[in-house]
Image (cartoon, rainbow, N blue to C red; front, side, top):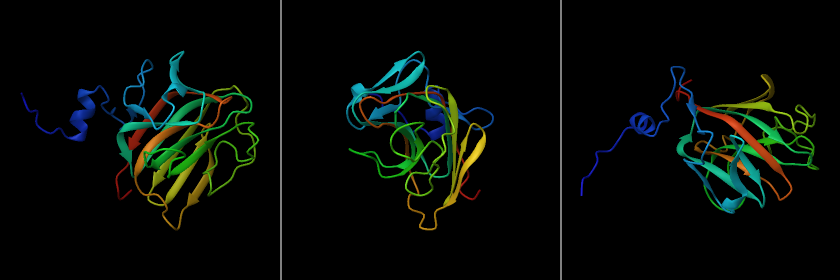
Length: 196
């Protein structure tokens, strides 16, 4: 049996076709498969449709297992149906149920009044920033205890968590409940320097 030497994170990402671009951004999704992603439960709730990661079914969370976020940026284009509910988690722990970590809410018209652009449980947005069934962007910047969430290029949340509740963990996507249908594309991750 041949034993391969340990690979640095950068070399491993390059071997797997996930090398960072010149600007440091890493593509999290190949547009065809869920390679690098793992559901915490109900994996059948996740599929690739029309080149998008699609959540449709029972509650589940899909974790990007390639690299953890400490100081990072995480962004995606997202579209959700009328009455749907989802979220983009970061610095979150893999495990069953609703993850322990930060969540940037994705919700245009669900009965939960907390809408897209909110840092769930910390900073609430009640205004509908993206219509139902329309593509929009959500961009998370997490540097130390300072969290910024931009929706369609505009800052919706600029929050300092004095308790520094979550410091490191995975990025994940939420399929909140049966009846919600959410799609994600152009998912990107960029690590940031610890001291930035």
